[in-house]
Image (cartoon, rainbow, N blue to C red; front, side, top):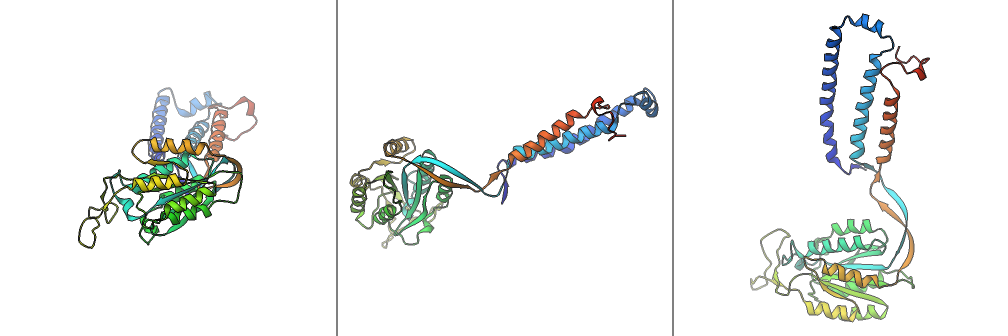
Length: 340
């Protein structure tokens, strides 16, 4: 698989034909100026060491060097890169609510998008941790098992939407139970769960699940997403048609803050409400930083491997060759007749 990380720089190739045209025009002008001094054959005899071929070669070397430089700054990437990574962190399970109520827009752009933005920032801040992702609605599923590859975690996070869980509802208890089973058997590292939800628990036993997790030494934190006042639930993510009940009334989804607080309290964790500030992120970071960490070693996979150095060495070689070629014969290589 191949791509350019910064493809916008490839537009610089548009300038190269104009550079060639300018060089040709300058050469024609130079020849006309020389002809004013005498015939070309006579001037060549007067300056036997001067070589037009060298001048042409120097230009084309610079031309190729510019082409390679453009490709280089566009950052070509190819294949997969595998690295051994040493990290010192905790084990963290992130459970995100993907029920239809998460499409409500009482927080911009909607609850689910804001949750994904927040979790992306959390993952960026927790690069030393091992992370697992769980999605839940009426059922809970492991989206990504425990891994230290946080870049993959962000890729998985971007693919999350309500269609991942066909059974609607908000089974917070199932998500917590599944999260507990997603941790490794390591004893000397602390473990934590972050549940991000609007708190509409349709099962009713999330508090018991959080308490059970706490008894096993796992801290359960809850991020409330939405507003207590509530808002209608759109049928589609960007549509203006809203869900209705059996009587035709528009369904309003509200953040159940009390439920979220009860779950966090039972799990001996933290409850924060997500808003447009960084308060929730800072509070979570502070709570997680207090946990005991452990050194781990694992393989990290990145989808693309940088080929920047390869083109950089080609560019350097071309520039060195161009510098070594004089417009007239180089005394250091007087016995080499490449341009005769």
